[in-house]
Image (tube, rainbow, N blue to C red; front, side, top):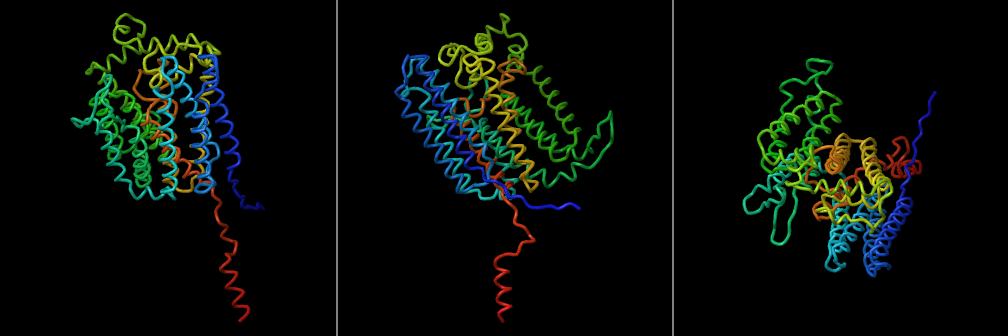
Amino acid sequence: MTTVSAVSSRKGRNVELALLVFAVGIVALAYVNVGIAVDGAVPPSLVAVGTGFLVITGVFHLVMRWRAPYADPLILPIATLLNGLGLVMINRLDLANGRDLAEGMALRQLMWSALAAGLAIAALFILRDHRILRKYTYLAGAFGFALLLLPLVPGLGVEQYGSRIWIALGPFSFQPGEVAKIVLAVFFAGYLVQTRDALSVAGRRILGLTLPRARDLGPILVAWMLSVGVLVLEKDLGSSLLFFGLFVAMLYVATERTSWVAIGLLLFAVGCWVANLLFSHVQRRVLLWLDTFSTEALETSDQLARGLMGMAAGGMLGTGLGRGRPDLTYFAESDFIIPSFGEELGLVGLFAILLLYVLLIERGLRTAIGARDGFGKLLAAGLSFSLALQCFIVVGGVTRVIPLTGLTMPFLSQGGSSLLANWTLVALLLRISDHARRPVPDPAAPSPLASEQTQVVKMR
């Protein structure tokens, strides 16, 4: 005979607080290390930057104790540490280019971090239950597709460095694709919860794969055409791969059929092959990927070559924070921030940073497993996979595993769009994990109201 007893979940907020203190300590130590290595003294901006970062972290933790006490205790510290390390590297690049805190990018990054954390806190206040988002499934889909197409609007979209993925509003620029990945994850989760039974219906078995019925191929064909449209019209290979890969991954999680993955990979390979034949910007990316150090490739762009040589200079243990030359690579603070860390922290330090992403993604997938509703499972899995796929695209691009794209590394890279989107992603994962880890009331236990009613009856 087996006895099943309920186990109360630990809130884990004290663990979160200890990890946050540890994360802030690492960031402060790295910031001091950069100042000593570059200027030979503790940076005078340490108090201002450290206080600002500590206030942001402390406020977020207090809100977690109040609004999401059962949320996963590792997600917030990992995101905080990654955000802080990115801030340190951006400050290091400012110093290399002769910019102080007032006129450099580090102060703006700190301000964007505060704004992004504030948006995440607001999301925790407004969204008390993630299941409310399911009501807006098709609205989220329409909004997500509109965000993807927004850079194509004349007078609003801006083409930068060959890709049209930005919109300009006066002095401010924004990358709507960063927000689109979250909104589309909500749409995919709501849509697949409703249709997964039909999509799981067995079809013909060919070459060991059970292929879906022809009438069920519509969703993946639409997603494929949309991703190819992004690749062709906006010249953005990274976003195209991200959105299509997100849909295929969530489709697999919903149906548990490997045939969807095989069809998705085949469709994307066909799309990339045709794009390589027809469009010159794709051909340039492939040239830089396959023959980086050729004369033709270097005349096109030597950015990738510089990044690879920087990482090679770092070796196993790196040159040390503040002692390398990551500023020689173009966009070292955004697209190529991973080679910047690879040069100064070496392979060991870079693997440590990648391990932080692995842990963050693992906690997101663990949240998906623990979610009690199908929509929450799919949404948490989709958000986690989008983070994993974006990391793969960025790291794979700068290490020549795949062609180089224009995506930024979550939390590390300089830019407000990326910080706002990824901190919102963290807030959604925290909300889902709070619901998943919250103890379920024991139905066998009498409620206080029932006990009072029983006592009243006995008295009568």
